[in-house]
Image 1 (cartoon, rainbow, N blue to C red):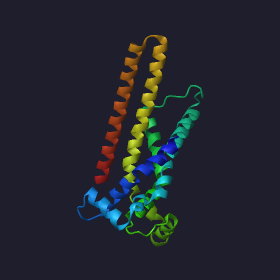
Image 2: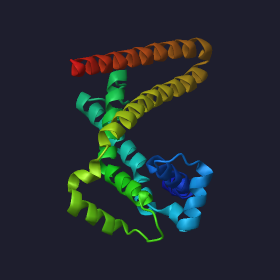
Image 3: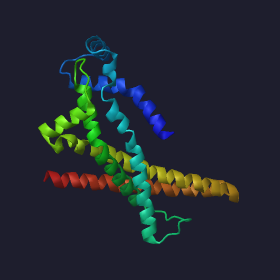
Image 4: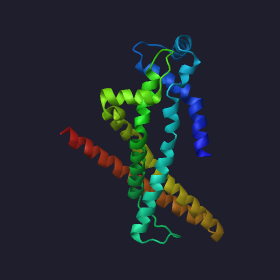
Length: 223
């Protein structure tokens, strides 16, 4: 179901990304409407789906991310000797780092297709662009590095976002489980309030430490 929704999302949003790419590369000050009109006039409606194959491959990014994350969590539990039926609760920092690593792996594996997609969408004219031909041309003329141009900036954005997402996900999951447990035991208000306060404090502390470490890293690089 997740893959099917991802594919539907690609078909629904492809024209938006094509217009966005053209506007980004255009040196003029064209509006969205004029860009759409120009594409329709010069290239036809099929131009809005340039880069479709790489975009469909990129649907696998979230799946890879979650699979890697789950395997890392299992590895941490197995390493600590925790029972499979009662997995170990990791620290906020550990969840944050595992989420970051999972997204980094997914990004490294799929980023070349992001570059190819952008290259295809940037090609103007009615001539059809073959994905494999474009990839071969990029490799022959620019080398392997061409497939990873701009990955550093992409990493800095997506890895941090993903790390916070998994951190929040784990604490929300723990909160929901605590809620059900409290409902069964009949002392929901007191236990739930305590759980919310505990998780909130832990999440705030992790965020504070992360921001502090990032600030110190930037300062050391500027020296």
